[in-house]
Every structure is written in structure tokens, then in C-alpha cells.
Image (spheres, rainbow, N blue to C red):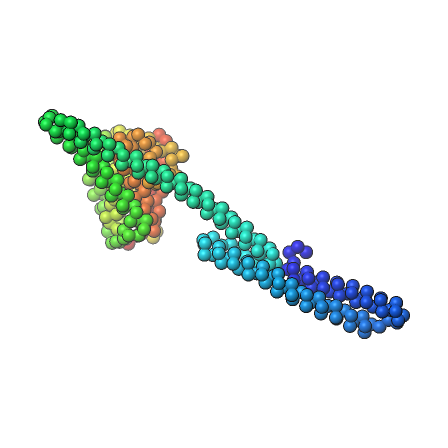
Length: 346
């Protein structure tokens, strides 16, 4: 009975009251005249029922129409507030519809508040990381300049050395700012992807050749599994080069000495999959979900020693997503790490 529309319930109540009233009136008249007439009973029922129906229409206009308007306002507010609108089953009554819509609205607001809290935490972490990353080179430059002003400028044994160190710190600041600008442009769509048809195999070979000296210095072997044939993709060649360089450089920087970095290319239907793996120290599982965040470092001290900005993987993720493709990472501590991404086949 609780799932029936209040209008239907009121109709049943009106019928029941009409029957009761007609019986009472008929009994009263019978006691007065001691005569019984079905016509009078029927007339009493019709009059009582019509009176009840008039009251029903009044209640409907006074109460249910207002409830329906409130329901519509809530739905409209939710529709303009966010896109997570649940379907309402209009076979149920208006009260249930209103209750469900308000509960769904409340859940949406709760989820929105939780999302904003997470964003606030992320914002604070991001500002703290930016401050920390820029503070180090700024303090270094300040120290070098003060040393030169205090007399070091006239000392030929240190002036050139300190100026070169200051230049490195400036270069580091410029690299951080450039990376932040690139991420911002990718997120806002200002940095347009310019797709072209090119051989991804040739591009990877070119990057491996360019990184061979750095890899050799750490005893790391760079290999491309087998000799894959030319495979053409439709993507922004310059940006994809950035992705490949970043992943291979990271593999060389953070892989173990005398290890190996392998690149594999797979033809997977409409896409080409590129996989870059190493047999290095690996990444702990708790770090993997946040690995592509800005400035996030699994090993902070070691990462800064290597001179990275902490933005490389965030840029990689944004570039791949700007191509409407995906990038994934799998890693096991002590066994190595595998990055893989897809590109549309040309």
C-alpha cells in the first residue's frame, strides 16, 4: 500500500467515506420515516463521492502540485550543478520521487565536497612541492652570488666555478617552469597536438642511439627486441619523442647499474603498443597510483640527486591522453618496471 500513489489512496478513502456517509444518512432517514429507499442511498453516495472528489482536486492542487514543482526544482538544480543525475522511476508516487531526488542530490553534494577536499589537499601538496623545487636552486644562486660579492669575484680559482654552478641552478629553474607551462597548456588545450604519419620504430631507434652514451656510462644496455618492421602511427611526432625520451632517460637514471632497458613494439589491431621495461630496483606498489602526479617522487632523495624536475611523468601522461590513448605502469620491487602506452595506427 505504501508504494501506491497518494491520489489513488485518496480515491479509495473518498469511496469508503461516501459509502459510510450514505449509510449513516440512510439510517438516519430510515429512523425518522421508517422507510427505506435505494434511490436515496444511491443519491447520498453520489453526493458524498462528488464532495470527496472536489476535496481531492483541492488537495491535489494545494499539495501535490507544489510537491511536483519542488521535485522539478531539485532535479533542475542537480542537472545544472553536475552531470551525475540518477533516473527517477515515475511509476512510484510523488513523495517517493521527491525523497529519492533529494537523497541523490545530498549524495552528489557529499561526493562533491569529498572531491573538493581531495583537490584542496592536492593543491596544498602541489604548492608546497613547487615552493620546494624552486627554493633549492634559488638558495644555491643566492649563495654563489653572495660569495662572489664578498670577494670571490676577484678570486680566479672560484669565480668561474661559482658562475657555472649558478648557471646550472638557473637552467634547473627554467626547466621546472617550462615543464609546468607545458602541463598547463596540455590541460587547458592551448598546446595543440599536431598529428602526422611517421614510423614509430625509426623514432625509437633514433632515441636509443641518442641515449646510448648515458646508458653506457652506467653499464646499461639499450635494446629493441628483435628487428621490428616499420610501423606507422598517427600522432604528434615531437611530443611522442618527448614521451619516449622521458621514459628511456628515467629507465637509465633509476635502473640498476649494468642492467638492461628493453623496448618492445606490438601491433594490437587499431593501435600500436610501445613497452619500455628495465630490470632495475622497481617501484613499491603504494607509489604506483600517484606516479604520474606532478612532483611526485617514489624516491625523493635519489630523484633530486639525478636532477629531474619531478614533472616528466606528468607530462608524459598528459601527452598520451591528449592523443586519446592510455599509458600504464607495472612494477615489482627488485625486479624492474614496465611502462606501456598506445598510439593510433596510421
